[in-house]
Amino acid sequence: KPVVAIVGRPNVGKSTIFNRIVGERVSIVEDIPGVTRDRIYSSADWLTHEFNIIDTGGIDIGEEPFLDQIRHQAEIAMDEADVIILMTNGREGVTLADEHVARILYKTKKPIVLAVNKIDNPDMREMMYDFYSLGFGEPFPISGSHGLGLGDLLDEVAKHFPEDDEEQYGDDVIKFSLIGRPNVGKSSLVNAFLGDERVIVSDIAGTTRDAIDSPYEFDGQEYVIIDTAGMRKKGKVYETTEKYSVLRALRAIERSDVVLVVLNGEEGIQEQDKKIAGYAHEAGKAVIIVVNKWDAVEKDEKTMNHTTKVIREQFQYLDYAPIVFVSAKTKKRVHSLLPVVNRANENHSMRIQSSILNEVIADAVARNPAPTDKGRRLRIYYVTQVAIKPPTFVVFVNEPELMHFSYERFLENRIRETFDFEGTPIRLITRARG
Ligand code: GDP
Image 1 (cartoon, rainbow, N blue to C red):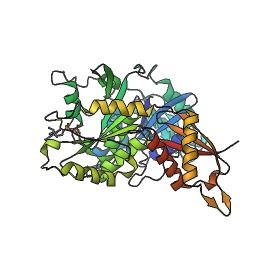
Image 2: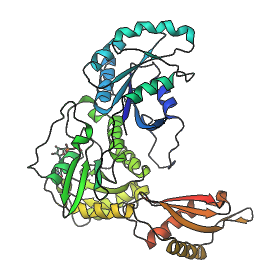
Image 3: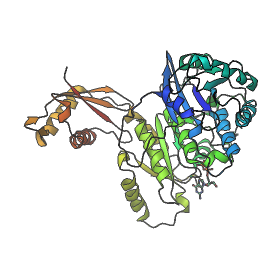
């Protein structure tokens, strides 16, 4: 999907417009401890176009001076986006900070659409003429608070979408990515997979981001390692900011079948690790937890068990994810990761026959009767698998309100115990039988 980024100095209304464009999107998993939706990146659509949108204003670059902050945000947009929306405030006219952003954007060949916000009624249109001077062609008047002008703006944005953005890897190819905090060893692991002989291509201006996906074959299976684009070009100031790594992770997750959540075995688990892992879970991808730098850990025969226990406690929602201990440095167990990836991928697209599924559910209900409320009992009529990636089951019942979270969890566990869903989340949806 094409990526659109909104840039501009603070207080021009970037996040209002972002929220308008995104609309009300409720995440499927609402309550994962430690995971709060950072609303800086979301999927969106306009007419027949689907795209992803970034609010760069939400990426806080820390203690940097004001002008540096907005420069970094513009650079992120230039790195990440296919189309950039430059937002300004029509009521204030062109400011020095707007010109500063514009000068940075002159360096990119990417299409830029100029939006002038806070033009709340037609009388205010003459306030816009000033903005031609920024050199990005015709400015589009919009009103974030009234939701005006967005259609025309998005029409213009969509005109610049690349023709065929979808990569076409065959169905047999497993796409996986490595996500995690900076410095956990993601790039080192990619290099360990690919071998040292591989020439690391630098980021050449004009190449698409897909060009840095790494196709890879091992033991007769084809893979594509989805690079989180920035993994190889280090040293930018914003690289280490939390929201930026989250943004990178989200983009990689979206295109992956299997996500390897990389932890640094030398350090304890941090909040950021949990957040990043939560995104993979929430996206419904197959997940494997990889503990890297295991070579550097002082250990005895109990260390692995102990670490496993800690991870299970800290990442309770990822109880299905296998844990693999590796070292990118010594390459120990790096290649034994691949069979784990294969299996998780297989389970992620497994289909269960309805007849067998319903036997399992009937048996579960016989052992642990469905909940009641005010004298009414939940009745499960039948269960059917409606989707893969992740396996998704619809449970048809008399009254969906009678289904409790804990009972859903019980049914999920019965399904997991019966079928091998290691490495993949599964989803249960309760519906009234129509
Ligand atoms: P990324 O930011 O997650 O891509 O992390 P890098 O791959 O750049 O690694 C960060 C640092 O950790 C580098 O100095 C690596 O040499 C080091 N490193 C990576 N993997 C290992 C490992 O398995 N063992 C040890 N001891 N160091 C590692």
